[in-house]
Image 1 (cartoon, protein in one colour):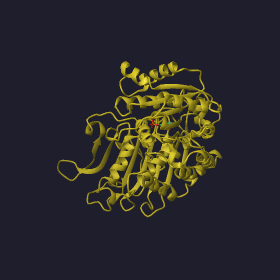
Image 2 (image 1 turned 90 degrees about the vertical axis):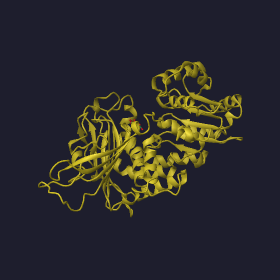
Image 3 (image 1 turned 90 degrees about the horizontal axis):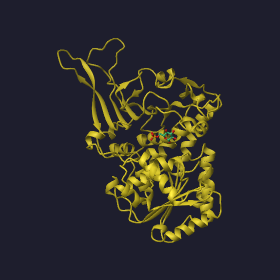
Image 4 (image 1 turned 60 degrees about the vertical axis):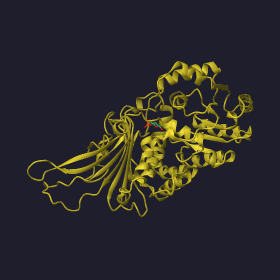
Length: 489
Ligand code: BG6
């Protein structure tokens, strides 16, 4: 819980890429929300590091605009003025050697104790990461004499196994792994953390969370948006690098992992790593890449682009618990609805006492964890339809965040993750071996797509993907949609 944490010590955060989209939309609004909840210490500094010719005043005015536009907490001018006094701007190119000693001087001027605890946040295009890391090292900013030094690195962390490994090496030349916080913002979502609580703070689900009771698992991250203004990046990334390697595999590991011995960074990440190690190499034929019609006309997209904006992938976790249980992952842009959900679909009853129509099967039980936007959980089961006879109807048992937690707004993922990094808790950040194993799993898939070994399909914007996706799960199985409300297929 955000509001039952130990108070933070004074700190300074340096945001590289302070004029960029992420700082505007996520980082600064998250800091403002933390301040308004009373979660920031008395003394802190937020230093924007970027190329643009801005001053402290410009930075403050720009950030005010962002907080007004994107903040989840109501803007208050007097509160803002208090908060904005902690914002500073440091102008420098990322590869400008004197920019870093000047940053040291600025930190010295800001003074102890806030300047002793330093968090560097790389919110720049990924090409700049190695330069910044190396410059921080050269200026001796990778450690602090009287406090701690940490670094947050945004995704994408590399664009394949080779570059992911190389980046890990570059980072480790300057920072120890314990100082490194690789963000996957899905881990900051309340409902994703609830998956851990749900699995391991209840006794009744664990005994059935395995191949004896579960038929298959579905993980869907569907978006209605297209590539928006990010075509330059997206066309070289596609759904494989943008979503599968990170968010979907993270959801998979939390669903499939063994109980960690404690909720701490080492125990949790060790268990997630074991799932990635147990992944059966994905067969290209178990994947279905597709592109929405009209994608090639988007500004910044190559006219003959083969980049998939949708993919369905079938995975197997080769261990005792999950033998024979397929995991179906799907993600796409320009789909019919925005929904992120994990469905555990159980085996059908082995025999029906009740008359069934020809070809009719009993509906399997399913537990759906709705990650967003209608945060909650749904357990689907069969009930007797009131009246004569023994007719059945499928019904739902619901847990709903808005109802069950008095409509309290959920904190943004970035609020939680920033607090954790400031507190030195890396449990919800990705470790170096995890990143590399995730690339190892997805690389061959992306390679098969890029070389045309698997054909690219096309789909109508606003649909649930290509027609072929409906059949992807095989006979007698359909994708769950709208947080378990119905089966599409
Ligand atoms: C980002 C991807 O990591 O996650 C985007 O780069 C995607 O393409 C976004 O839209 C989805 O995040 P959320 O929190 O809206 O589900």
